[in-house]
Length: 405
Image (tube, rainbow, N blue to C red; front, side, top):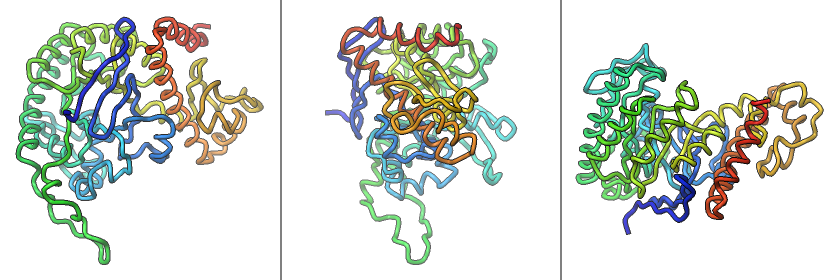
């Protein structure tokens, strides 16, 4: 049996119920993946993430490269051991973070040079370097380095970035295959404090070979259908990928333009591969994407919004600090198994937030995460039972009703 595989068992239109097999377990799809930027979802423990229903989590290669260092993560046993997460993991290349440093980076055909926001040190990010970093970190799925541009960019700018991303993909592929074939270079010698155990306690040959990994390419092209088609054509001609990601969306474009892009991409992507939609995580967007054939999702917004008091409910988003919640004894929403909903009411949660008690942001971040996990679980059940179209229509109508009133 190969280390990776994908199969589907039920479908409703373009939506599909699937299973993505990885070396660290099977992910039932559709699935939302929490974002643990520093190998940790801010404020939450990994056992809480697991209890919320998460099957697969993300870490960010850029942040781990800067601190504690990708070689340090490797020397500590890889990101799974480092974070104490035994399920599937994915690392984003960090391209988004690098390109967001507009004042501190320079882009050339070779790659990106940037200054760290931590200490001002200079770094050079190339497709080859990114593959080496992500191989050291050791997640199951790793992403290519691609060129990101702002939402609403011109056709010419979008085409230039898309074409460069394809060229960088080829360089990522070559380096990824070299590392898979030849193994990783030895970890540099690292000093440890007096009395601390040595880092290199694992098998040297096993460390050199690294765990099995899958490289995902990223479809780019903005909201231009012609460019998205060209990107997919270039990706599929460049290799037989375990899965394909769709990036560059939810960056300020209108929702309908984003949904139209789903419609363009999904029919062109292989039916026997998982489709990963990057950076999309609002409940209605997830259901719209599932209905158009997407399988995997991630986004930092749900937990970030929760930490600032915005929560998801079945009746839309709610700001818990509003005065209307001051005496409200109801839970945040119905049928949510998270601690915020099963143990507390809106009045108390509002009290925690307005008094700036640290428990409040933790509970609300965990609520939003649990809400999305439950939404994906219900989606899988609806697909299995053959009622997805009607169920999702009713779910979206209730969720969006307040916005229309």
